[in-house]
Amino acid sequence: METLPFLLSVIGLGLLGYLSGSLPFSIWITRLVKGVDVRDFGSKHATTTNTIRTVGFGWGALVFVLDTAKGFLPTWLALHVGQPWIASLTAGLVIVGHCWPVFARFRGGMGIASAGGCLLAVSPLAFLLALGLLVALTLILHHNARASLLTGLFVAPLFWLLHLDAAVIWVAAGAGLILVVRFPIDWNRKYRELWLDREQPPGTLPKENER
View 1 (cartoon, rainbow, N blue to C red):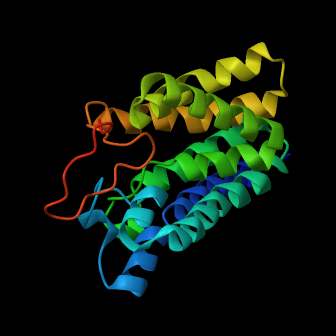
View 2 (view 1 turned 45 degrees about the vertical axis):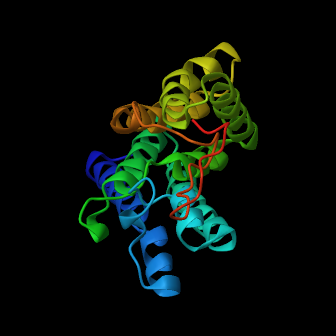
């Protein structure tokens, strides 16, 4: 492959990854449905779970599908260039775009759904293993942000130990690195429920099992 076309393809895929990640579906959908900015509520992040808190489960499920798709498509395209590190770079830039989106004043989400989409593009098995690791760590730690950070840290080494394909390990490393950078912001956050720390209506007494 000639150097200049190759470099242009790498730059193009990286730009596609960032711009795809920057599509702030949770912000657009909550504005359309309720006329509000999802970042003004709950966790203050543009995420699937915060969309559920703000406008309901159905709309949150739609955001999850769209956020997963915007990680899947650029990574899938990058894989066809033939270099695993290019897919890794593209996946990492998808997560960068999701967390710091150019279309939403660089205030976005946390990147979990998009990272899942990146892994799904490489291997459904890798997606399920990463999801299992995230669930297991959340159940152990009872803290979603810390579990997500540790998942980003450990997922690529786990895939290496399991002898998965090089492309899977590269993509997991690229996406996981950005999650490790992103999640310290919520490291000390107080969670009142295992998965969704929903805001309670005024005057509601706290539940005994809230954290």
